[in-house]
Length: 427
Image (cartoon, rainbow, N blue to C red; front, top):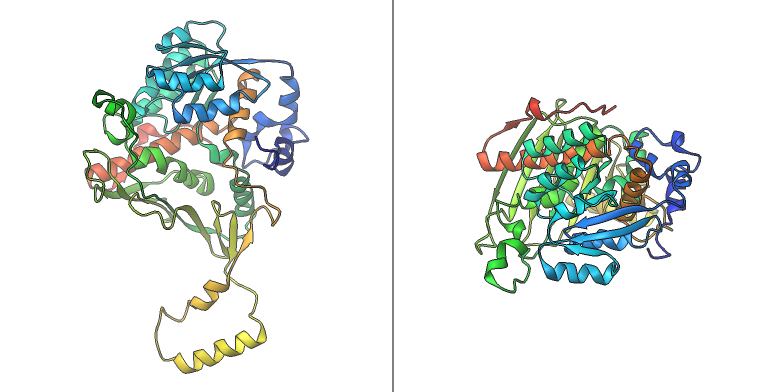
């Protein structure tokens, strides 16, 4: 990791973890895996890891693993040889295979990473738990709600450590933003608007036609739910995290409006999650325009937080300097009888509200939490202790994404099914 990125010790200090696991804020119990107490307990140990599916995302995780002195990468497993070849450039001493069951049969493997196409997650994960391995599974957990529940129950039944690739749980910007929210800095949170815009067809080059669905699996419904399982699962998680609840109903719409190239998943979606008190989380994604990028706008009565920008904004801003205030008053006198957007909003005030930085002006470069997430999985697996809530947050992020897709497919309002609710202490 680059030296100018927040060091792990600085990160733990920010989260109040250096004094030991008991110092963890109740908002972040999954952080116990990185406590100084746990890290000292695992000094000198090695977690023997296999990466199943070292494609682009798998290699991203692999780069963190090879830099962790407590990790030994034993196996790389993939049915696609070019992915194995690229992964061997990162972990040249690892053994390779094309069948994940070879990895599960190796008693020297302690934990596996499941970074394969979405529809294969369930079987590999459940088999890994039954083989006595700890599991890190990329998001989303699964292709269907029953599969996600089966995976979660296998984790409970076997007692093995289970992490999901929801890196925002370890992102310093999000952790500090949530701390401020829970301290009431922004007042009650009344709405969460999330969006993720891109301008690309999401396709990858295919060396021969028979490899189309293997390489571009995200575009086909037999393997993926597209934008909902690949993007929304990151952002709709804020609902459980901030509201401490799951939604009562979900509605949505979607279509293929631009990339009409044979894909089977939408390129334009909009989903609304409504909670029992009427508050909402919305998700929108369009991948034919990237101007607004991605963001979560967390709106409270006293202010707004935008974690991706690393900024927050209070509703009340300091008064303008005298001269600017005089000009503004003159303009209001001249144009006061013209209705722009109602008397409750002044566009000039909005432009002048530049906000404050969540981590201060000497903030570190953007770090999405992936490194800390990987470190936490390693520490938890070495101790065999499952951190509270990390599996549950990943589970519900998947279920909410899949229910959003169901609402789009069925063109109706979905009520959160009782059978997919788990025993999870939000409070």
